[in-house]
Length: 194
Image (cartoon, rainbow, N blue to C red; front, side, top):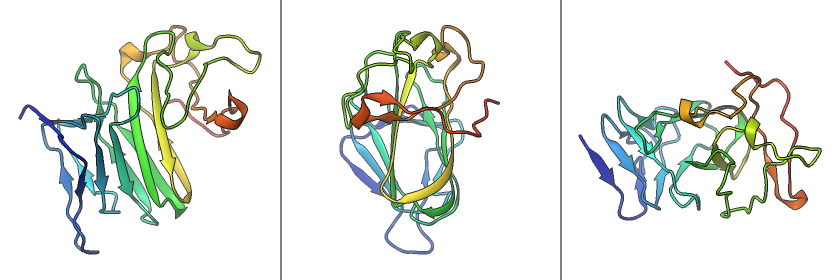
């Protein structure tokens, strides 16, 4: 029970192709503490949890999970939780292709969505395509998701009720920051907001 704090980068999952070790978070809070947890077990069950969760929550995205998913199809669930103790899992459901390593982190923001990420990519605003501040329509949380491969995957984002956009959560859609253009890409079609 309690909080377990990582003091260095760690690799879990073992080196054998089958069976590989599983990180069972169980009922504890696992604070990444500005470190990287690498999961070498590509299976979707490479991380499991019960009531426990993993805390990322660093605005510089230094607390991250590096899951070596490769071509292992299925729903890879990161049992993230926020600093208030609310579970906010993220799911990377690989449907085809090679994801390679998928590096993931997340953190909460203020109502105006600051602080913006500065690493690994600098985000400079949350304006819409007309150049108008869009923070009232934006969830108060950033996610950094970087696959090294070329996968086709369904992503499921979860956030705490206290992180809801000021104008509510109707028709929420994920958008990707496009660094070369200093702008947000239009939401990809076929997203849903359950």
